[in-house]
Image (tube, rainbow over all chains, first blue to last red; front, side):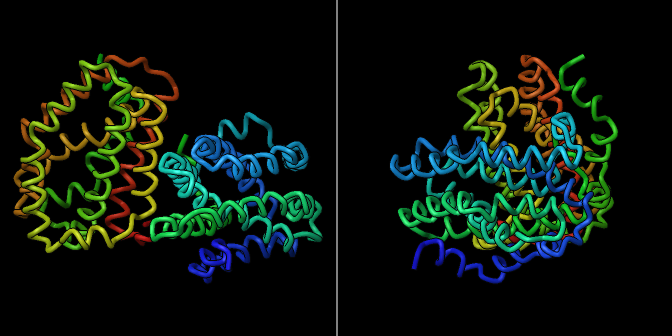
Length: 211
Length: 211
């Protein structure tokens, strides 16, 4: 059993709620209102910035072979991911100013600062806090692929791709190198909760008051 | 006009909402249910731990004369503060295990990680994120003092004290040394919003799912 399996089984109900959330099912069925997705995309873009900052901050604390595998898998295919993201943002009429001028909602603010906080504690804590986002989106992408809504299908074409799966494999492999304890499990659980709340905040369109 | 005055005036309505929140008024009038205060005290104790960790992390980045004034004012009177806190926790039957076993609510988790995040950016950012809590509680303490509820009056006897005011003066003085910009103002505003939401989360007794 991999460490990822242990961590996921520890929060099984939450994990299922995360990867099969109402938001996700509506993307797959094509019934998610486009303004909910637009709200989500702006929050997600802001999220990715701090997520990457946290990854870089934690990088130097990681075993060198593991982190180079991860960074290689990410940056090898980042152009492709950015290209799809750009295409989606254009279709939704979201420009850089819209992303810059929109604040974080409370959940996104908490989640991103949680990632950064854990990146200061150690590679193991960061990795466990980061894994739910990276790994979960692979499940979500594969599920949403084939959506009758072309934007959701395009979105899923990246997260459901083999390239993205390669990223996930490097993360699952790195997870197997760390020693699990209650602190690590809590951090993983917090992130799964944040992922659930991230979808919910998008469905509710929570106020975006945090700059 | 001090930098603190500028920062506060920039968020005047929010500031007033913070220091004269329903939670605060009910403390003063003695009508705040004790279980709301108990919930608040547990969250606050958890908050203070990460707040101090953030302060210590930011300390080495601060001008030495300013930070030694601040630490001197805090640690000179910390025993007295802890003594009052201990008395209140005992009256409320809150032991260390209760604090340890209770998680953070979302607002508290976001607020504490926000403080720590800013402590990694720089002394100016940390100071602006920290000031609303430290300075606001002086106003709140003076206002609540004299509450017919002996626990709330005891609580206010610390935050409304001259000793506490001395702490605040060192912080207002240190604030005058930093250069204000939009980033600093945003950080200050975020913290004032967190303070308001902190009272509200206690009134609602938000779930405490974050470990």
